[in-house]
Image 1: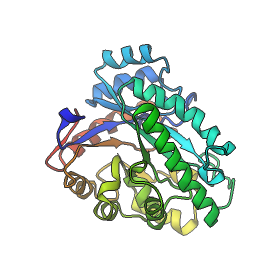
Image 2: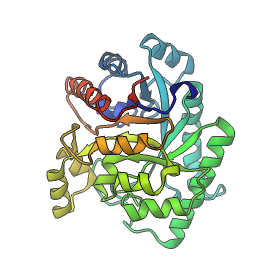
Image 3: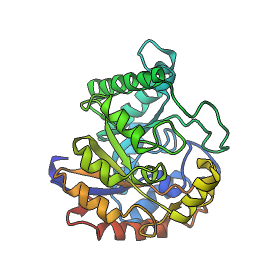
Length: 309
C-alpha cells in the first residue's frame, strides 16, 4: 500500500449485498455482486464468507481483473475462549479454515484478515448457545489464541490480524475491547474497528481511535439506527432480531457520525482501509446497489484524504 499515501481507502464487502453465508438462496449470486460493486464505483472488496466467491485463485483473479477490483482482506471466525493454545482442539478447529482464507487472501494480494469472535447467541435464530459472560480463564485463553493466530498469519502468509468486535459476542462493549487490547500483543493484533458494532455495544469509535491510535489497523464503516437501538436495549433483543428490525442504517442517517470518525482516522497519518458494511441479510436483490452508490458518494465527501483507489 506504499503507493496509496496517507489515505482512508474506501471499499465494500459482500455483507453490504446481504451476504452472510457461503451458499444461501436468499443471497445475491456472486457474479452479480461483483458486477454491481464495479458499477457502484468501488475498487476494493473483502472476500466475504469463504466459498461465496470462487476459491480457485486463478479464476478469482481473472474475475476481479475483468472488473478492475482488488482484495483488501479475508474474514475468519474464532472461538478461542474455548481453547486458545495451539494444542487445544478449539484452536486447531479455527486454524484450518483460517489457513484456507489466509492462503486465498494472500494469493489475491490482500494484506489483512478480519477476525470475528464467536457469538454467545446464534446470529440467525438468536438462541443462546453459551454463557454471556466469560470467566477470567476464558479471557486468558482468548488472549493467547489471538496472539498465536496473529503470529501464524504473519509468519506464514505475511498477513495482519484485524480483530472485529461484534454484537452478541463476548467482545462487544468498550470495556471488552479495551481489555482485549491491553492483554494482546500490538504486533500481532490490531482492530478492525467496526463503527456500527461498536455503537451497538456502547463503545465510542472516536474514543478508541484517540486512546489507542496504534491499534487501529482497519475499519468497517456502518451506522446504527438510534431508534431501533433504543428498542434493542429496552427489550433485550438479540442481534438476529435487531438485524431484522433494521438496526443498521444507511449513512448518514445513523450513529456514529462517520465524518467525525473519518477525520479522526485521517489524523493518524497512515493508510487505512474503510470498508463499507451495512448488514442487510436477507435483502431483496435490487436494494443494495442504489444504497452502495449513495454511501460511496457520502463517504467520499467526508474528510480531506478519502479515496477509493
